[in-house]
Amino acid sequence: MPPPPRKGRGAQTNVSGRYEPVSREAFDDGWSQTDPEPPPLATEVREETARTIISRNNSPDISFDRSINTYRGCEHGCFYCYARPNHAYVGLSPGLDFESKLFAKTNAAKLLEEELSHPKYTPSVMVLGGVTDVYQPIERTYAVTRSVLKVLQRFNHPLAVVTKSQLVLRDIDILAPMAALGLARVAISVTTLDRDLARRMEPRAAAPHRRIETIRALAQAGIPVTVMVAPIIPALTDHETETILKAAAEAGATQAGYVVLRMPHEIKDLAREWLAAHAPDRADRVIALLKQMRGGQDYDSRWHVRGKGEGPYARLIGDRFRAACARHGLNRLVFHLNTSLFRAPPRAGAQLDLL
Image (cartoon, rainbow, N blue to C red; front, side, top):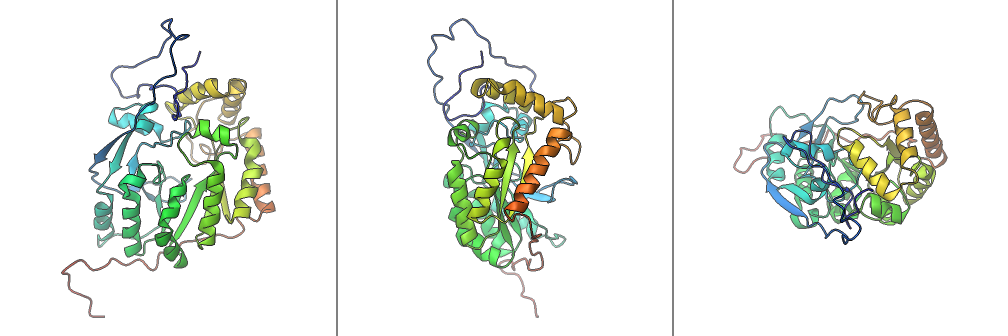
């Protein structure tokens, strides 16, 4: 039997990371029938002094080459999060540790200002939230993301935000003026419109209707909005693709993208545990379709294949997505952010330019 779910948490267990010298495995000791519901798991936050804040990549299937993640780990607790394996690098579990033992990069704004001020720095779109959500609940307390936005605004640096949180609306006072200059856009992730399913898949993220409201509020403020139908989970959420795109387009989204569920490293086991606990009637079908899209394997890391899969079912998902986008007017225009306005503000005490 799968372990009983913890209220407010996505992972079922605290599986050992692949770099740990020992491994932990849950087992039934015979008392499971009388055990009460597991106690709530408190969130622990540690302040982290980062050495650098801009992460760079040269992946050909990613539309940006640099990003900022203001937090390590994510309290949203999405069972499917491809960032979970990163917690193994700090000796923690990609399971419950990932969503309950978090790190706040409190020196992020200072580091960013130093890196942007370097004479050889060349601007390109900076993505906030390429790995963990920069607007997860602890942002209300630490406001690291807002401090980073203020730096990017001072430098007129183009940025894109990816989030599933309504907290992004707090920063419209920064994002809207930047968007008016062609410097900002926001992507909202909508996985399902089923509130009950969302509560179980993404226990501490905004409810689906709140995300649609967020798209509407951002669009009304003049901020270009993309809806990310991500991840699409075959036999569980893929039937909602068209309704999600319709709702997002009606709310004001102009762009859309999608990713099929990825299961790298420990995610393959965490996903199976979650499916056994929350969708036992479809668990085998979900895994079978995912493996069918990845050549019979749990995961395929090849560029351009890892996020979409291949084969008949992958093509069907892609065709349905593109047809729905065309029907609702999404992705009609290519939108580019402006890099020409980037300027490093003068440092305190620095000599001003003559011209």
